[in-house]
Image (cartoon, rainbow, N blue to C red; front, side, top):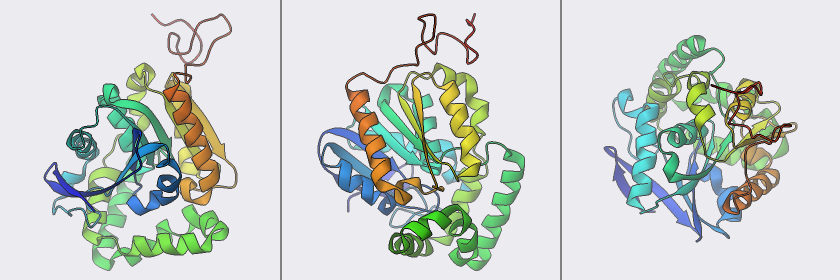
Length: 295
């Protein structure tokens, strides 16, 4: 697979298909392989790019957690687009990857065609406690290896995944166990623990003029309120809730997820993903979330 040096790290990526660019950003427990059901389906119509973030071999594993902060991960994504000579791309992210995609859209809206943000917002409701908990898990991971987090990440948040697709879950678990403990601990400290709550970006999100599709499993409790917040705040956004589905929604329900994303991308390409119309003929985005005119 090709590799490129971005923000001081070697980043490995995979390209398939042709058409409008579509970049996949993986979650903390995943990797580029987590997007295989989507790449297999969507590469028929799009130029898909999946990559491993810093700390996820075969990408580089920098020694210091300061190299893993959310803004540095956004810088990697921007540099990847530049290296591949992509002017504007669709972005599709899950969890950590969805946070990266949204922050990228806020910082570089002119480089985005549309954003799919799935399973996004964990920790936004209780950032102080999330910081403490994440630091504790980083310590355990460094001391005990990836096995220390199996019960935390491969149990409750992905119980439905294991129930629905035992073979797919076993492969996901095997890939997770092969992750770098150092890279994962640094990601926890640099990205997960220190990323600002999505709620702190309300003003910027309310001004974001990029089409956004939010996808959330109805059993992914930490992400439900943040998903609703994004839907109510971003003018050109929509929310899809998948029933009996946890955090790994793209893997738990690949057919439903693929259909949602394919429809969203097609509507964006046709300029048919507009703000919600209001009863008085106005559009969402020229008013506040309550429907009152803004000054």
